[in-house]
Length: 281
Image 1 (cartoon, helix red, strand yellow):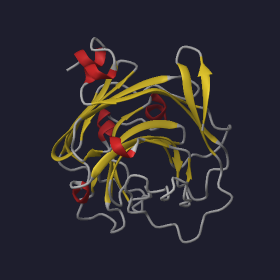
Image 2 (cartoon, one colour; image 1 turned 90 degrees about the horizontal axis):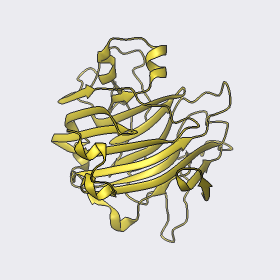
Image 3 (spheres, one colour; image 1 turned 90 degrees about the vertical axis):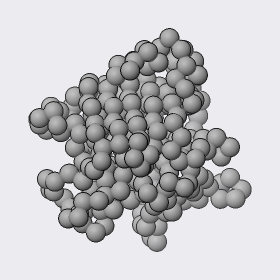
Image 4 (cartoon, one colour; image 1 turned 30 degrees about the vertical axis):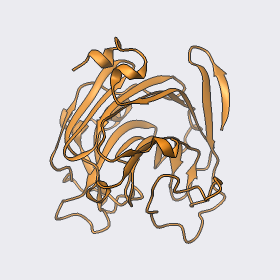
């Protein structure tokens, strides 16, 4: 990581995830992740077989699962090489303790920007390995252009394992349960362009809540079951930076920039109580 100066946003963190030389044997199983899962007792990085360059919140800022929190950040992603495949990339996520994919994630697949929520996969017909359910709450225009679907596709869902791999490829039945999604606008593209994202999230097994804004515009709202049952007694924390567990690994440097990151219990404490996000309901 390095700190660079950037017009308009000022100082920004530059995070670069370099390609892995090879997958590390014995590290293919999902970790029972808790805060500092990839850091040893001395604060040194412990390789886990993934391509990542992340900033994690301090341990003292970790919150109990289910606490309402507001997160705001400005970020940008450097465009990958022309023609490069991006099967699985996450840049920014709210995690909870346990062997699960993120509760909230900013995902990038084939250059499409998608925001997803995670919950237990209760579909009785699911593949046994697809224990998590990834629910799409927002995406950019490029995905809509490539896969024209009815508006309901914005609230689509797919079963996956904790490593985000979908075993039931081609399944048409969604796994979303006990969750409503109100998709309002498309996400802007953050490739080579700064985007300000604001999230209001309260994980919960019954009355969870998520609201999403991009550059001050309301993008989506979700209410219902958000998160995983075996994480309910644990903690939640945010981390930002490129993370990929693609197999084969990505063959290029993934570069992401972060500026003006804030997290607070109320919108007004993000810095501007008159902001659109604070007035929007």
